[in-house]
Picture (cartoon, rainbow, N blue to C red):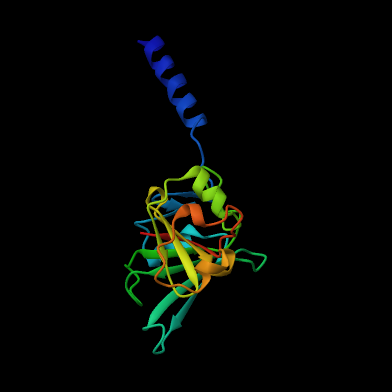
Amino acid sequence: MKKSIFSLAIITLLFIGCKKEQDPFQISKQSIGLLTDSTQVKNLKAVFSNDSVVERLLDNEFTFNRTDIDIFDKAGNKLLTLTPKVVQDSTSTIETIKVLDSRFKTAKGLTSSSTFGDIKNNYKISSIQNTLKNVVVFVNEINAFITIDKEELPAELQFDMNAKIEAIQIPEKAKIKYLMIGW
């Protein structure tokens, strides 16, 4: 009896000792560090306890009464911009995250300072959307949509909003303008 209790205690200690701590800069399909797709606005200060959480109410005809929440590190560097699903509701979850700091990365190394080649070589591109000034690349595997400025594209594609842009037409060295995660 004592032997089985001792063995159980050793196994328990091994599991506790081997428990992997969450990387505060890891991007996955349902989380960014300690922030998850079910985190409520009211819990953001606890999730980002070592950082500054600043809420901005954008209320004009172009932003449609939207609240953005900026996360800054202690040095004053902007890390993320979060947009809640419901404006001014502390129980709302986060709808989109703009990743601004290149320390945030996916398991395959994608960061806000990556290139299109990094996306293409590591992820299945779900779709590409052509907009007025940008191309938006969707990667469902990580719930990401990545904006690339059309200035990074060949000249014949920069001004044609109706062109169907394929991955092969985007240069591998094209820089990411915005790395966004959408839940």
